[in-house]
Length: 119
Image (cartoon, rainbow, N blue to C red; front, top):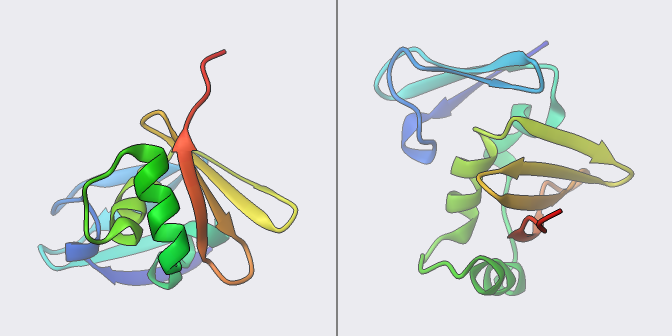
């Protein structure tokens, strides 16, 4: 179990709120400014390392029709509340709110994000 402390400003979680990911507690807002993350999920434990490239930011904006200056921050806010996070090979895949985020497992770079395909 990994314990990570993050600034609340980067996440959409409020004091006292608990969010679950992959069957275990991952986020506990202990104060208005700080979140403690306890998880055995490596992606969630390393949220502070998530980033993207200029090209990745463009791709994310285009694929999700986003109008934001900081797509990486937007993705972090979504990923922290994902209930379906899996690792396949060198990438993590997080599904939430009809979106799928692809994150490189080694560098924690958000490679792309797209809308889930209807089945």
